Length: 224
Picture 1 (cartoon, rainbow, N blue to C red):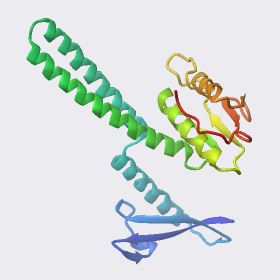
Picture 2: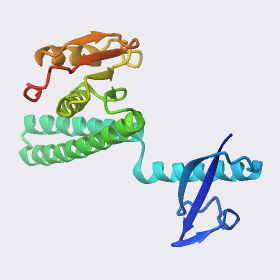
Picture 3: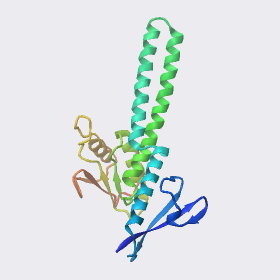
């Protein structure tokens, strides 16, 4: 039987399970799988579930989620567009100073949008790929330009490792696209073709691209 062993460290002091308040989200918790432990009470697992739920909620509040960062980026994009529209109107009316001010505000929102999208990529990529092997890549949640950069980096890393002879890229079926039209798959396929890389579609599963890397250990791949 598989059970969980819990080690809790709070304020740099080891404490027992009963000494920890599950609401204390500042507590640092390390969990590891320990085989052959059969003596675990239901209250222990209830406590653990509550504690970990609070810790995960805390992490989301502190670092934000990928979806939250995307929403932030969309908000900044809308504000940027509004500023640029106002800037053009003011310029046409002869108010060049007002137009400049609105343009600068728009540029500021652009920088904030880019930062939010960059954070979103980090969080989404980590969420989707942290448990995957190095020769498997999940692109769900990424925009085309972001996905291309990720694929380029991973392909080059795999090519430098002689033991990795293929890369499975999960592009999905396009079900979550706004209009149901796939964007990632054709963009990634086009890039693979430009790099003269051999690949198979829907292998090993639908929504996947199976890239052959054996014998493709030449120069690095780049986005043109």
